[in-house]
Image (tube, rainbow, N blue to C red; front, side):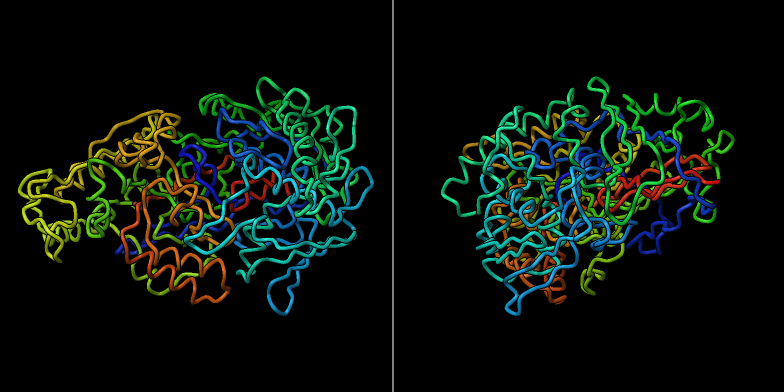
Length: 632
């Protein structure tokens, strides 16, 4: 699911990189896993560290509010039990995995307005009922009725000329074996399947209740236009939402025992957040689990997890999968992933996980009262980008485990459409160019911070809103307690000074930074105070468009960024399946001043027991334990 990820969460994907070419335009993440290909040994219990340390699921109902929507709740928990219509991103491939969910490949009407989603005849709930079109309608009805409560809802985007689920649905038609959805206009069909419908999770009709006594509700039987939809769904939402947050009853509530995924929750520790899952014996999907049980163990710190890993893979309750803390991560070696492995003697391999379909960045505030005018200048953001040595950070403090962000569309994993113009304009480390563009636009670089000596809006002047004597300086806030990040940003500060740009670095807690990230407006003057913040990054769904991040009025656009041509280019990626739409979007995005300065994507290597095979993660930080097994 597309969305902002905090710094700690963004490190949950794993992989590595080879040194880039001399122009430092890209990295080439490792794609060869080291999991054993030895014969499968069915059965057994596996112990896996919850990640990142200190996090655990807190919502089990697969209809989450905005403050519940997270990887820890979705791909690392709920998807084990309740599968969305369409599953995306397995094994590092940006594609829809039709074998992983209840829906088969859809068909479209000749006018491109109606999609028919067939439900697999073999896919059913553990209570014996089949997954039907009505189960899908149930979820859509809930979304329509509870838009203000839902973390999946995006309001209509007038600038981009598009509506989102469910506002873009004109009508639906359900049968026991399918649901047909007619939209308000033609959309990119890959976007509808891989971005919109991949958020939709069928819900069993047994969940259409209003209390613990099982009083039957009416939410599942309504249509999106039913006059009583709001009232019918409100009572069901109130009950299910409360039950879905009651961690003490996650494993005991009969509601959550009705599953259609390959697993069922066996136990949940309400204090620590640790939990265990066992195979759903009624599972009728394509991939049945090999293991008898998977225990997700909770750790409050990386050091606590590291202590358990160092004890070895043969100890009772040893971890089969854990994560190396940065301080103990071996330097990446592209020729031998096991080189320097500090856990080799106690039974662990270093292993690659998946690459997130994400972009890393720090964000600048066009609405900043102090320096917004600076950030709006394309030459200035170009200079800021030129001073960001992504590969240097990867090779240095991050020990080779990372890959670069080169533009608005991720270059890795493979599968995204990349235009020639976007490739030519890929972010690069070029301090000489940064100095040149600052000088060329009227800045005196004899001191740091540089001062504007040529105010005005001409090609060789400082730009609109910048006065003579104004200084090229701003404050960049970032999360505390990240030593590698300290090193990376200290180098960035030093590099930027060479172009006359003074970057004042300030550390704050992650939560504090999150509270500061608001848009500048008359009703929110605090949003006009921050200059630049490194909070995290953005994980895309299948189609990597920034419709909800950067378009005018988008929910996550807290940068005061607005560009009608950009909005129009984004709209094309949502409405059209023509690759030229992506080319136009990427070309324009690379030609303007965006409020994002691209940064490396930090990734972490896993420690995996040598007698254990795991499939890593999907491209959105989820786990697929049905593919895990011990080897003979």
